[in-house]
Image 1 (cartoon, rainbow, N blue to C red):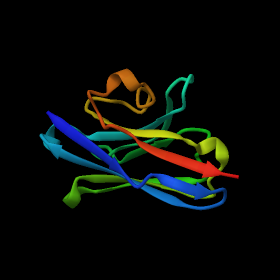
Image 2: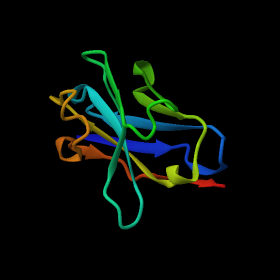
Image 3: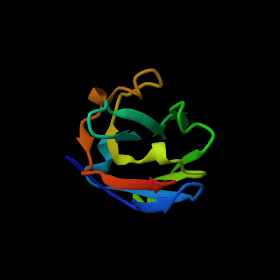
Length: 126
């Protein structure tokens, strides 16, 4: 069992930067992939970015590709999502998810992950 805890969300202005953190605890040896998803009310969950450290693979969603960096600190069991040039349309609840046996093709599929955090709200004002 893996527990995930997101932090770093908040209220920012358009153009600002923000770093989200996803701290994993529990049976962390059972995972090798952590991704970020986001969701707004009434909309589908959207893949933001993912990292599969066992294969040194990183993937980004189209909407954040040039404005985000995902990274991992193995010693802290924490994955970070650095977001830059934030836009009002980035406003959402951001969730991190963990799993294993996830390929670069399935990284965007939420159902492939077995552990999810509670989410952290990011609000970007214009």
